[in-house]
Image (cartoon, rainbow, N blue to C red; front, side, top):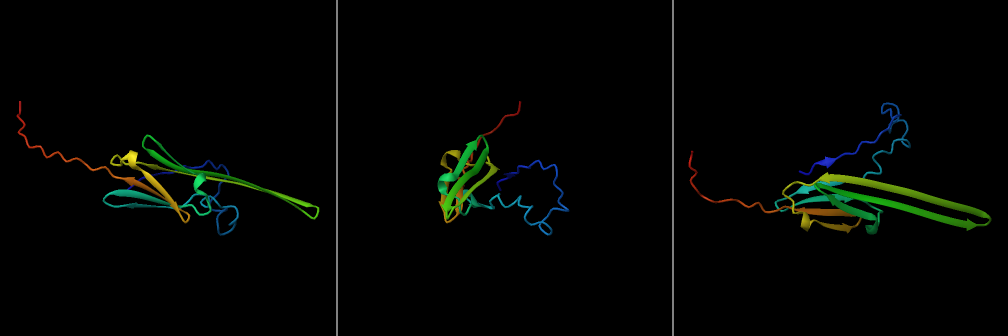
Length: 141
C-alpha cells in the first residue's frame, strides 16, 4: 500500500477539546480543504482517486520529485458587481497539497492521470519483477 505523507500545521492556539465541531462548527475547518483520497492496489497498478469536485482540470498539478508524488491545486477567484448604486466585490482563495511516497516497484515513466466528474485518478503501474531463474552451483572457499 502507498504510504501517505502528512503535513502538520503549526497551530499555537489550537485547543481541540474546546474548539471542535460540537461547539464551534465554523471555526474547525481543518479537514475541509484537504481532498479525500482512496488508494487501491491490484496486480498491475496502484490507483489514487482524489475527490476534487469544483476544481477545474487546468488548476490541478501533479509533480514527482525523487520518490514523492505530489498533487496540488491553487485557485483564486474574484468577482465585482455594481448595481443600483451598490458595489460588491468578492474574492476567494483555496489550495491543497497531498503527497505520497512512490514504492520502488512503480514504473515512474508510465504514471498517468485522468480527471472525470470531480475525481482525479492517478494510475501508478507496477514494474514487472525479473525473476532470476539461473541455476548454478556456488563453490565454498
